[in-house]
Amino acid sequence: MVAFAALILLLPPETPNPLREARQLFADGKRQDAIAVLAKAVEANPKFVEAHQLQASMFDAMDRWADAGEALDRAIEAEPKRSELRQRRGSIRFKEGRFADSLADFDRYLEMEPTQAISHWQRGITCWYAGKFAAGEKQFADYQNYHDADVENAVWRCMCQAKASNLVAAQRDMLKVGPDARVPMKEIYGLFKGTHKPQDVMAAAEAGKAAEGDRNSRRFYANLYVGIWHDLTGDPTKALDHLDRATEGHRIGHYMWDVARVHRDLLKAKKKGRQCP
Image 1: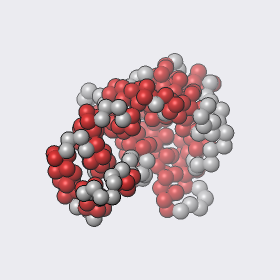
Image 2: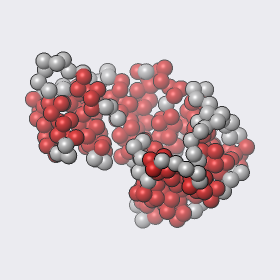
Image 3: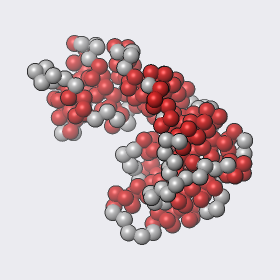
Image 4: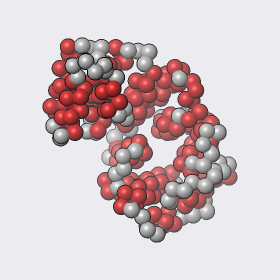
């Protein structure tokens, strides 16, 4: 998410500053008033890209992803050559469950910023949900050359290979990673490799001492990946249980929380017989 403070710094000091006013209102809990200030600003100047961006950030913080996407549509219309707008909208489209649109935005962003291609793990996740498993596998394999001690990267590549071929083959070919100090990443790696059980992951998340925020994060990641594991191996009921715990009980301020929510919502839609995005 683009920091509100950073957006304010984009304006010269003498400029009348609806961004500052809106940010303060939002911080004070007057969210609708903040949105109204920005709406007035962009009505007066439809090319006020920073106001559109701040609108999108506020809508995102309010879990109003369709509104955030529309704000970014207007920003891109005003400044189509600004690459970061494509990146931002790709993330929002993913949160909406619009995976093909998310992938298109990420791909356009990387056309504009090719040096970012190797590190673009968000694109790999979108590929998985879009059913582009070969592209996702390549994305995560490339990311390994950027950061070779990330358990999550190895897990997502395994998931892509499991969908493209089968889980046993994916486990045999699972990326080797260096030490990932985050708890319970070692056990999560073992779960997808086939050497650990879901209960090992959950136990590791509860073991030892941890500050409250760190404990919450451990529980989130444990439930996220145990939930995904159960879905991958054919138990959607257990998957939903863990993904509900991750999203409702252990929310974190990170993109992976949105991954958990999106996965949960897809499972719920499938359970109810609705068409998934």
